[in-house]
Length: 276
Ligand SMILES: NC(=O)c1ccc[n+]([C@@H]2O[C@H](COP(=O)([O-])OP(=O)(O)OC[C@H]3O[C@@H](n4cnc5c(N)ncnc54)[C@H](O)[C@@H]3O)[C@@H](O)[C@H]2O)c1
Image (cartoon, rainbow, N blue to C red; front, side, top):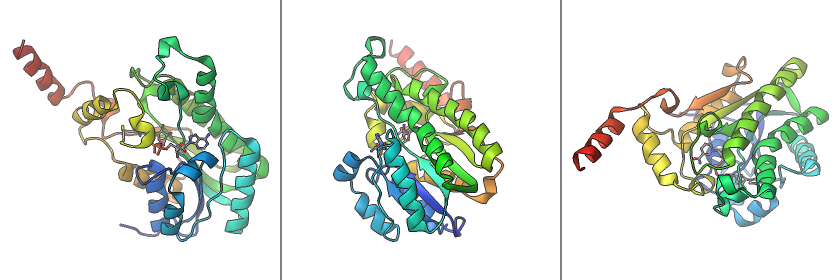
């Protein structure tokens, strides 16, 4: 399906841990569409992950470590990326999420605040750092596109999603706020994609994830959006065909967000009632 939609464009992809990662699929899709890529992840994830495999699949894309909560790391990332590209950046994928409270199965109502701060810093505030550093270094071309990945728990409560829900609400708010300033200053657009539950390392860490997945599948007229579908959608957002979209949270969820209840869920309830 590749049609060189991103020919000549240069992008930084955060968050490709392994082949299930949404960022991994997005890097492959963007490369297939003609983009030049720099891959980045937190140093520890680079040591544990398989990013060098991905780099090879993306034309020996440079791999530059950066903890997304560290301003010096981000400065280094943009500087090295611009050197590698021989120019400024056209798109950025922020595909970063981590909650120590989720990892340690600490209930939302019994939260550990130090962990909570880390969740907000890594999963939400990091987008501000990524944007602010880019703006200070003037690292993005005019009409660049920055996309971050979100989840519907920013709007509605999903027990088990824990403090990640608050981090996603922050992420979406930063998208609107920074999108305003970057739009006026440089015509840079900033959006979030609110993705269906997807089997990945981060996704599977959420308690009750299997139920999220099957419930969302039954509730979504088109079914759950896969990571590959998400990657393709991100590619369109990096492209010039979506250049007037900014400050939006775009649901990429097979219709889940607009469905009150589905026939499949009603049938399940009827069966359960019949069984007494
Ligand atoms: N999987 C889902 O169900 C789902 C649904 C909606 C949105 N999302 C979002 O998609 C994004 C990508 O997650 P994924 O599902 O592909 O899982 P993933 O585990 O493959 O990716 C998460 C990435 O975040 C990186 N990361 C963590 N801390 C970091 C830090 N300090 N600095 C830089 N990178 C850091 C990890 O190394 C990892 O590569 C996340 O924002 C996640 O919340 C996931």
